[in-house]
Length: 355
Image 1 (cartoon, rainbow, N blue to C red):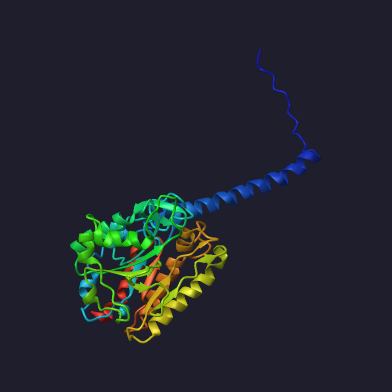
Image 2: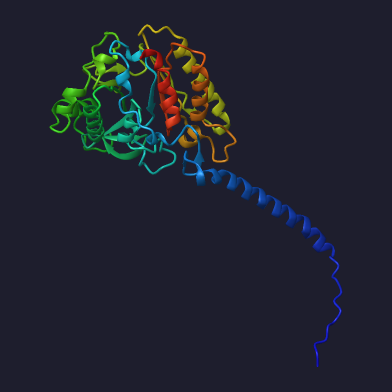
């Protein structure tokens, strides 16, 4: 006996089913939109060469892919340091810190130097009578000794270059096992330590108070200190925020929607340096970095959803456009979080008139 097919009457949706359909449709639409924005944020990082931890930027992250270990060799000796356009890094040693609030770099110190970066932001705190590198209260895992040894090694291999090093006392001494001052620890590393004193004797520039800011010829194979710590003796370098320094450092930004204020500060600083007389009176420095209400990586590359452009892209595009209209000018020291090769190259091109 065959199977009996029973007629099936279509069910009519009741009032409750009719109410559920719009809700279900709205949920589906919202889910699709969320998936779209997630894919939009991560898709370029599947194929893009300038992506890092979900962030994309044409002017960030890939500094180590294009090396400029000897770019200063093309600059004549009589050119003053203040005439140069110099790329550098903010919170240089944070590439292994493990906190997105504190990480500002993704390449190690040796690679930063080889990629053409010539300004280092070294922040130390005294702990157990040693200088350890910190960002705020976050320990980077490095000491001042290792920083010096890496820099000495680079300068030995590339004697045409000079390194501008800001050395900042990042906070009060840590712990109760300190018997010396920050200055004492600095002097030990530069003048007494069997590991670093020989390199320091060769590579530390002997700063002369009230003397003009040196020429590149006087600074080749040297570290030029920007002193950002108190000292009884010295000075050991150009005083941070002193009368010979013009500094832009608007770093407290409430959220990504206020990055336009940071960009205005950067642009104004770059323009000021470019238009100022080349008279060796001032060293110009501009930070492209920001934090507090934004992550350093967000300020540099823009947020993941790419609704706002990051400071690295804004700076790179601006300098590329401006260089076409300026023959002989510098932009000073440009201090960057997560720099990319395109941004470094753009800054270095501003030195073409000096060669």
